[in-house]
Amino acid sequence: MCLRSDLNSGPPDSRASALSPAPNSMVLSTAIFITLLGLLGYLHFVKIDQETLLIIGSLGIQMTSSYASGKESTTFIEMGKVKDVVINEAIYMQKVIYYLCILLKDPVEPQRVSQVVPVFQSAKPRLDCLIEVYRSCQEILAHQAVTSTSP
Image 1 (cartoon, one colour):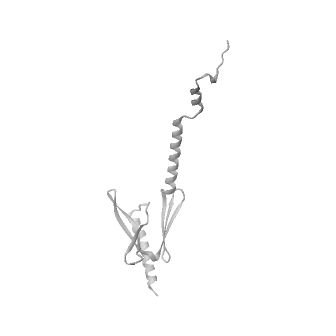
Image 2 (cartoon, helix red, strand yellow):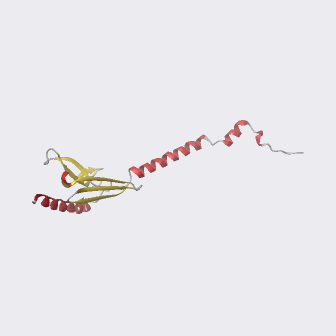
Image 3 (cartoon, one colour):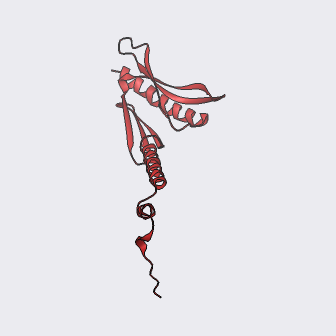
């Protein structure tokens, strides 16, 4: 008596499904891939790790945002365009939040404000921290106003 096991003896459909991946695993792999792409996009374009404010009285104000991916975004505002730096307040989700803003002069009418630029857009510093930054900014702006008006 001879027993022989033949691998090709099953129905043709069972052989094809054993060799090709199941459609569900393909869908799962695609979903994982898209999720990973979304996470990388979030880290690269949205998640801000650090925000800095640098004021040089004779030049201007530089704001830098450092993202989780290492990317940096820098905005520079010339000192001649700056009218003032203020602390604003807003109601957000049933609580009052405070944020630092730069008021830009209107090019046509320098006494008016043309634009309000928020400084720390991702970080929400406490009011006591904002007051400290505000005082430093006002000190630099006051010194700049004195030096620009004296001959």
